[in-house]
Length: 121
Image (cartoon, rainbow, N blue to C red; front, top):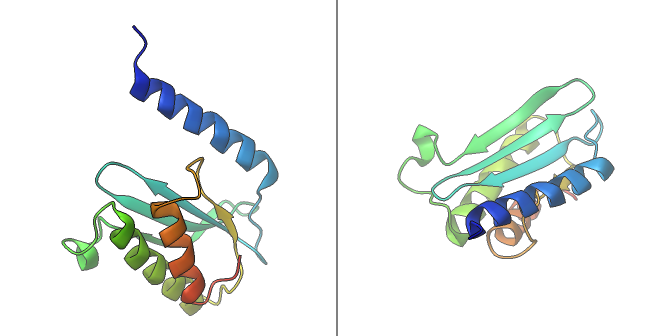
């Protein structure tokens, strides 16, 4: 019997690989990458040409240790935090990489909060 969770993960990875063929982060417009696990949320602003992470935020940080969980409300909080950190670094426009996840629920909440915090994508 096939393992449904393994099939879902493999499908998400295939979708992400297709997305990454078209998305490329540059110094002028870096890539905002978001990833979710069962318990945590991770986000990075990446310059792919230089291979460097320009800004990052995650629910594992001590600042967010008890306030952010891997749900819609937590994604909105982290999206706002990510937008503020990127703005402090002088980043105003990014390319959004949803990581193969559907643009719904947590991903949508994260994106809308980042937009409200000042990021354009």
